[in-house]
Length: 375
Image (cartoon, rainbow, N blue to C red; front, side, top):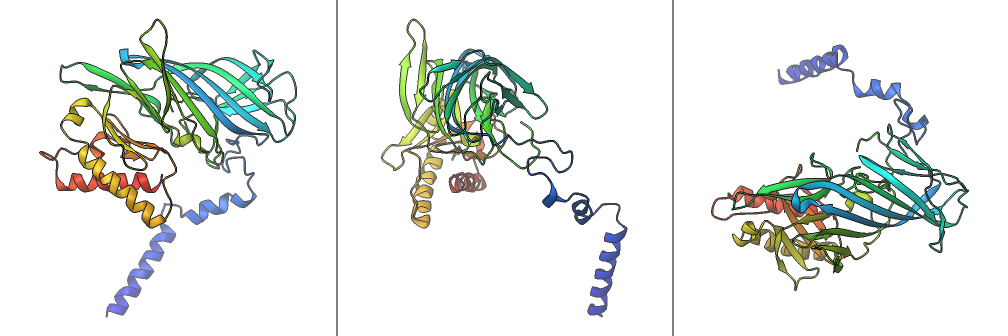
């Protein structure tokens, strides 16, 4: 009897699949021959969302300026992209999103200016900034492109975006942070980014080679109010006061070679707890009242144990010089595994032992484990 019933169920399932209005994946696959499709074009509409492979990025020098401390969301940026020419060309193509391009210059391999006010066009459909110098760029040579731009720190939780909280005095306090995965870094700076998918858009309304197949070195500098602290993937190299103002410029050490979507930075009034003796040193950043309440203690303890456990199990030391974790009051995801600066929605990093549940404890440890594992 059971054998007959099983056969009936199998036959019924197959019949439903044949008559279902839902089209099985096999039919869709047959319509589009992915193997025959141009690798730089979307197989459905034929539009190329990939950058041309005539140049390759080597290093980024990113400078940003923000007044987020006073609730001013405009920002200004300058990016210097050093690149190598793979094929002689008269175009440099990078990706941008939600930024205004002010001026572009080209330098040679000796950092000498060879052209200023370089002409450019924008392709909004594929978010390409197409730079067209009045001379050919020679195969095998290195150049630098300097791009000046401005934009607005976003309010949708992506790219370089703004967040806020209400302090014990009832005042709204603003901060800025980033979420660049998958293609949002181009909002903070123009970049190279290569992906075989049709995609939509670190503070990054910018131009960059925004494709994960491209790795580069990144140096980040942020001008901000002295009452705030700037963080990025690497330790602070310098924090210099701007004469005659209450501003400072925080410059970070150059990163290891990495993809643009892992670049991250924050500008906030957060404070931290730390274990400076750990290798790498670890800090938990959060609102002052959360740190004073001890809400970051459990995450710090768990993070130290997890880092040690991963290194012993994998027999690979963590590559970056520090690990900061940032508890953001507005974050669309559980956490983001930016190298050296993991960012979390605060309830997935902070634990109040007086009111939170055992399940909350488990969730936090699970999220931290994930961010460390994919870092």
